[in-house]
Image 1 (tube, rainbow, N blue to C red):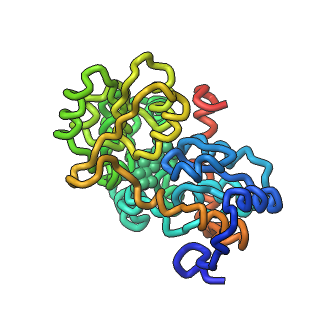
Image 2 (tube, rainbow, N blue to C red; image 1 turned 90 degrees about the vertical axis):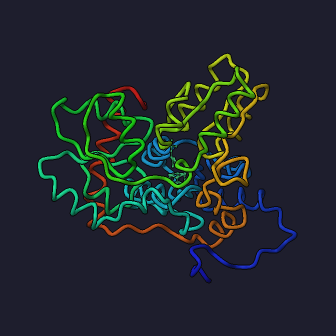
Length: 328
Ligand code: 13P
Ligand code: SF4
């Protein structure tokens, strides 16, 4: 069986009902399917759980299933594997990476940490296992503010790798964390001009912004938050229209939960598309999900020495999040 491309590249009978075959194989393998909100609608529909990065980590830590199929990007699969070393963790296409995680190579981050002794290292979950192994506490966009605030006020902090999220947390907490200079290519791409035009066309619309967006986008937001926080805001708020500045996959669940509200994706700056997609998230297809369950490949493996170090800051994040009531 061929997994050279990062996924199982085996022919599939075109007459097959992929959805029912996936559900049958899932049952047979004792697998649980978890999907991030940026996944394709057909993947979200098949998943047992959908959620943001924090929810997916927490669900992985809690599940009894021997097999976790994580429909998301590589670092999400790594986080699940680090938390559950004895389980089989599958990401249906291992080349589903993350430009933000890639903007922080572990050797360069290690040199940066060494150049700033005495700092607590706070890392966003969008990092490789090797970067997490250099970290004191991991955060996601759902808990970054509260976890940073839980550290003593005068504690020197290095925050990596997202300069936009780091800058946002500095601005709302008054901290002066040192920021690694990384970013996500999707969230950096929104057009300020096109967002302004959309706001003029839809003056009643609320603007929802992920904190990975740069400041000129964040300052026009009615709500800045993780995918889960933006979804909750859209469900709870009485507004009927929302302009959404994050990866457009989240619109599927927003629309499902709020069928009578209008969700408008904010466009990127490239002059072509009306919405902004993460090419990595969209690598996971029904065909790859089916073949991954059929052959139980490709699995996520993490070097045990790295995993042993990386598990501590992830568990610390989950512990603090439980103590602060962010998760149960
Ligand atoms: P969330 O944790 O908000 O789901 O974000 C994950 C991510 O990759 C954002 O680009
Ligand atoms: Fe990474 Fe950006 Fe894709 Fe999120 S949207 S997975 S941060 S590349």
